[in-house]
Image (tube, rainbow, N blue to C red; front, top):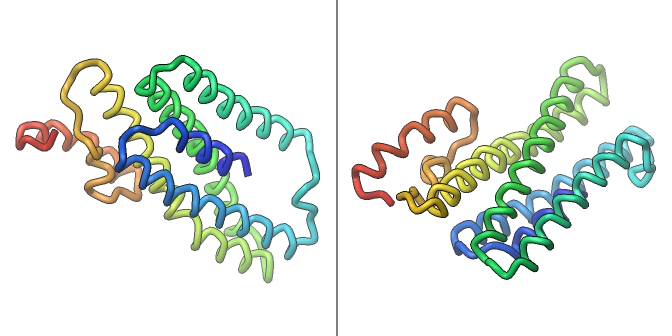
Length: 185
């Protein structure tokens, strides 16, 4: 649920139209991921609103990311706010990616209806989470490079190559030099 708030605030910071389109898509997908989790909680007889100690900490972190973006907006420097938003999205997506990896591990160990429900959720969400993380890292890197006065590849190679794996992300990041030589920036 915090991811929805992170994307909503990030969209207030974004300048690059390609990145805006990407984050709008990720916001819609993240809203669906919340629905998927609520469906899992319902199947398992859990209360999705219960505030556990761990959830309280994660919520605080998400709120802190939103606060950081609000601070960046107030600085009056749109490019800086966009960079802060990218950083915040990468942090949120790193946690999301890790969480879905853990859910996938649980699906492998679970039995019966629980295993089936967890596997179906992972099948729907994990590929999107991979894309969210790897593409966000690429956007952050390239916008930082541009902010430092160097030639950037925008949209980033991860976006152009539609990366969905860690290996693909590494290859895309390495390919940026060749893209620059071909005039891709």
